[in-house]
Image 1 (cartoon, rainbow, N blue to C red):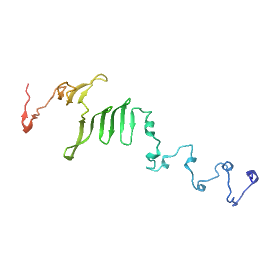
Image 2 (tube, helix red, strand yellow):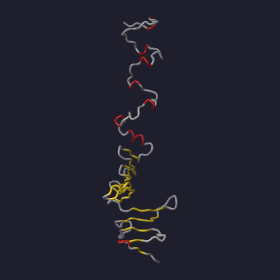
Image 3 (cartoon, rainbow, N blue to C red):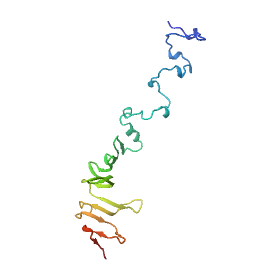
Image 4 (tube, one colour):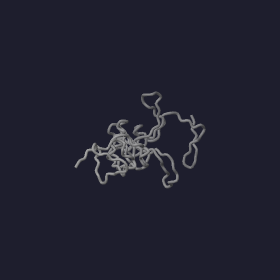
Length: 197
């Protein structure tokens, strides 16, 4: 039997025991926070959840939609891709480089050109430094400069182990004057060499 609310008026401490009251019949602001035993998160459909209500570390990777971060960055640049292990950048569909636990790695598609990152002396891991390492699929390392805002770069110093940058002349090449400022060059056995005009 359905009894219209217009026909019932409850006052004082009188209670309705084990009854079902449909939501449509409850007027606004009549149920206080203390009266809510639990609330299904699916019932929250609008509004903004305050950051203060989110526990630190409570949002884990399994709670994010597939490619959520990648899609979120797409408005910034389609050439930047994020994975749990690296930050990569592309020219179109061609991989050019990435930052990972190894350091800053450089690629040309499937070719691994080289890496710049932390290095250590072979045989002694305690001797540490910053290393620029040319991989076997790379051709050269160069220091160069560009005098203006555009145009080509002028090569000043080049490591060319295969002789590809300077054909048939593998080695180290200068592209500018070398000033020793009175410091000597030494060969094996600590024999010094003096340069003269």
